[in-house]
Length: 86
Picture 1 (cartoon, helix red, strand yellow):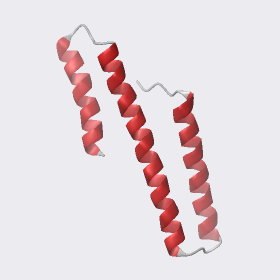
Picture 2: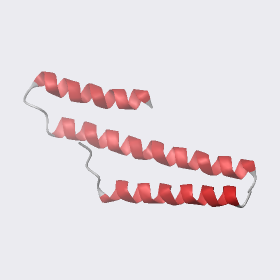
Picture 3: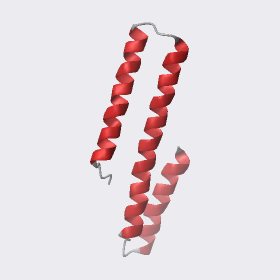
Picture 4: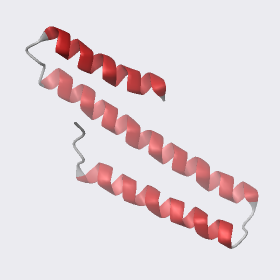
C-alpha cells in the first residue's frame, strides 16, 4: 500500500504541469532539443517520485516489521525489485 502524502501529491502535480508544458511546446512547434530537455526533466521527476515511494515502503517495512519473517522478507524483496526494475 502506498501512502500518498502531500509531498508525493505535489510532485505529481508539478510533473503534470511539465507534461502540459511539453504539449504546448509541441503545438507551438518548439525546437526538438528544447522538447527533449523537458521530457528528460519529466523522466527525472518521475524517477524521484518512484524513489520516494520505494523509500517510504522500505522505511515502513523496517519500522513496522511483520510478525511473520517470511512475509517481512517478501515485502523487502518486492521493494528491492522495484528499485532494480528502474
